[in-house]
Length: 201
Image (cartoon, rainbow, N blue to C red; front, side, top):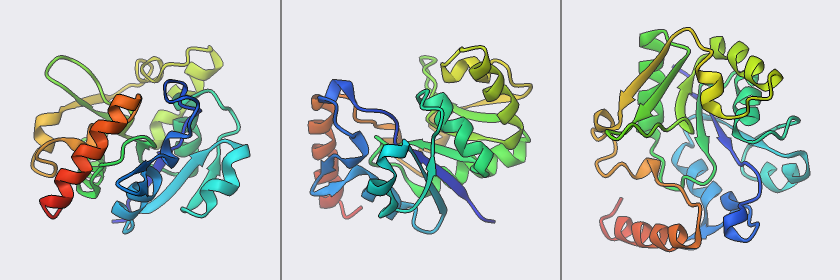
């Protein structure tokens, strides 16, 4: 089965001093490079702004996000291209087995979206499966200018939430969900990266 995944490079990281977060280096390697390397056996799209296309072309097949409405526009663009799993471009430790698991479970359940959820109710819509049947919901939310991902999810007919605990089989410490939003996160990412290297992961 061919797995198709989209990396959403997003906008400028305001909390990072307007850095392009996927281009930040962790243990000497850019986040986007780490993700692409991990997912090298999958078909990868990189969703980015037009002004960044040349930068990201070196890392893989680029899709231009003409809407530039944040993650909701990126997902909408990715789904129209045929993607099934989306990943935030600031998630340096995502594991290929997690992506495959979400894809396979989403297909099996026949849902519009399969979104991981934590025990406290926090959802992970930026590491999730979306079917082509979700395109209409995303388009509807965008046309109504309701620009949070969950606005689109609320419009879908069949949404499944899956406990992150079920994902520990493929990612024991659930580092796939770690994302870099602040300088503190970046420092923590360096620590995680170093510990993974020492463990031989």
